[in-house]
Image 1 (cartoon, rainbow, N blue to C red):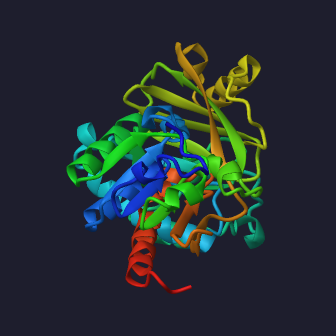
Image 2: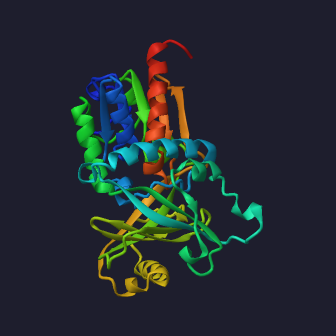
Image 3: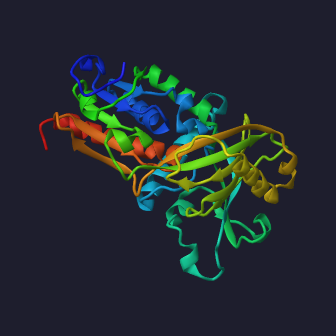
Length: 347
């Protein structure tokens, strides 16, 4: 049953205090935080967690294609510490601590303006992060960072979040939400974590896809993650060792809506990764995947009153940093929901 603007069935949408729209990592993490804060919550999601964009993500905890940087770094640091704790039980949570290198592309040595990427506070906050030595960087890269960061098996992590939500008393319902107002008539507070769906649901024309294609190959023995950090590039290079294979990427094509893998693009991904790791040229391909990152000029994390009077907390537009920002944003969602419930008549 889909939620529409009609009255019929709206009272059945959510019997608890809070309805969270969206079953990806942002929605599930927010719902877990709310349930563990004592709220009665229900997730409404058209897709199962394993079918969301979050399930396709490579899972590296690192701020990427998310604005504004100041808030994004704060959210990322919070998530880093939560995920590092979850990494003590990787089989259950899907989170592991893995060492790797993030190389900076298109950097000219000695020019500070070329190295200021807005993430200085992230580099300072991550325990043990240090500048990469020249011998740790590929040819043509002038700088980079070495760090031990959370690397998350996203399908496993999403299952973990669903189980944790259920244990906290929350529930998940497969349903398509066509109207925030309809959901608001059946809840004290609505939390909108609809990701790319916010383009139509809100509607918010600023929300758009940044298409990411990747290739999963049999891992020939690569144990560290590797990536390049150039947020303006349409082609990226990364290798992320996951339990199900080595994730190779990738692309970042704004306003591209197709979810179909392009064979030529896949060949280019493997070729770029093979320049860093020659053994990948012969690696057996296990799967091709495409995800649509829910991008926006800046994350929308704020409260508003819906036309029917219900408070709505918007939490969407996280681009390529969903898992990286999830726990930090969830903390803010909890605070905004508390404010909404404590002052239900305030404008």
